[in-house]
Length: 388
Figure 1: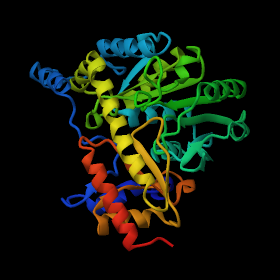
Figure 2 (figure 1 turned 90 degrees about the vertical axis):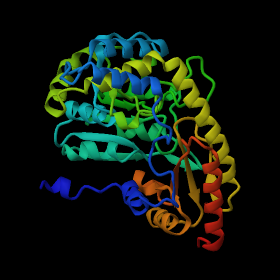
Figure 3 (figure 1 turned 120 degrees about the vertical axis):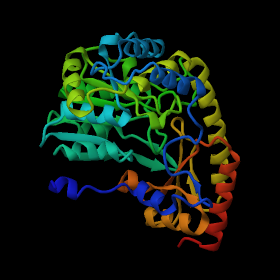
Figure 4 (figure 1 turned 180 degrees about the vertical axis):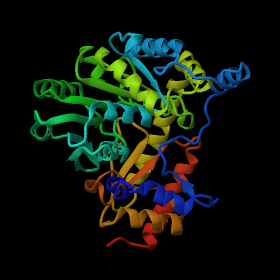
């Protein structure tokens, strides 16, 4: 085994979940997915595809019909994107890994803004890159980016900057002005940007296009920018493993080669499901977002009333990220909450050392009453086990 793999940190989220999986008495909020099943119209499209016998390979870059549908969907939210710039991938995770594989050589410098979903740090590490993390700063439960610090960290030696906004786990979201400054700076240093924008539709601020600010709104087609997306969150399709990349034209052929050597292509019946999801996006996604906002607005005020808790309502995403005063080991606390309170949360330090003492709560619950009961369990446990 390669030393890099041997020393790779396992997922702390999985470590906590494994301690509680199979227990009916645990309220699980550890994974980043809704407990609501994929809409029936999407499931039926996959079933129909299988019944037609569509069990063969597709083009490396995906079915032309799906690439065109993704381009139309993207162009309705942002400046027009040609279908030739779209690559369909076997999940958002795969989309991100394909981009890193295409852009990063062993020894290259990669800067990642954290706290962040741990895969985004691990992927360049697996490829032998030198990864530097730039932490967001927290105040009163809210996280923000020091743009001056980012511009100092990203230099002409930096091959790739990885950003996830809206952010998992913090809910932090880039403003248009921040994106413009980052793009201008990376143009000056020759640095590629990999923007993980899978949560762009899960955005709760009033905007004309009902999505978070995107680098696609301000970038040119030939900028050194790759934007990753997924069907998982906005369409309730986590288990389907279907995503896409928006690429500069010069990168498309290279991505196609890397897809061939990873997965060959996404399964056709899954792509048919994705096509149905996009065809019905005007029905599916606004309902999902409205429900998630209800869940957020149910959970966050209740958490804020728990003594010792600092939390702010996320502008985007599907998580409440909160700090408990006095906590010095998030992983240990998360394990105790599973074992002793029947409450499954993700430890903050899974997302970066700067998030030690924090916990992530996925509020994507079909029944908001589960969130209310979860807070009751947390409060009861903290009262019996005061943190010092």
